[in-house]
Amino acid sequence: QKEMLEPKKGLLAYVLKARGLQITESSTDRDRDYRKLPKLKNKVAFFVFWDEDGSGELEKGEVVRAIIKTFNLEFVDFGRVAAIRSVIYAIWNVFDDDGSGGISREEFLRRDGLADTLLAQVESGL
Image 1 (spheres, rainbow, N blue to C red):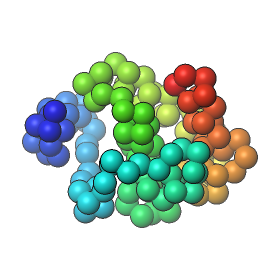
Image 2: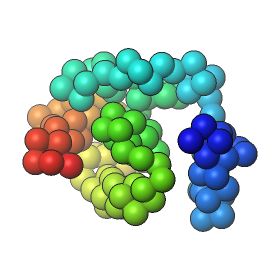
Image 3: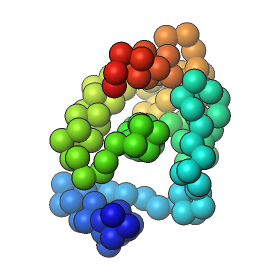
Image 4: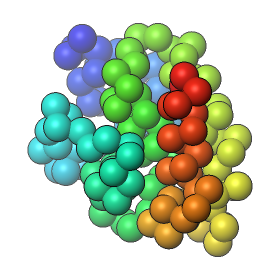
């Protein structure tokens, strides 16, 4: 599994590159301890942890990665990962009020914001 996920060399990087996508590896990603993931119910900690680049906004890729890692979804299940990515991309503009392309902390935390929507999906069986 490690070979598959290796940044820039693994199978996942190859497939994403072939589809015109890319993985960015930041020092925070390399140092991140994925064994201690914050629960989605702890919305602020979840937002801070998954704002991997420290921009103050969650990007689509960060949210998709957060869902995959938080719920232990297998990267090798490309169909499920693609479905999650499609849903995130489809609903994104509903939560990105200012049109910045990212979900700010306020947009994430507000009542019926992205965090509440993700929680509702988890409770219904994501």
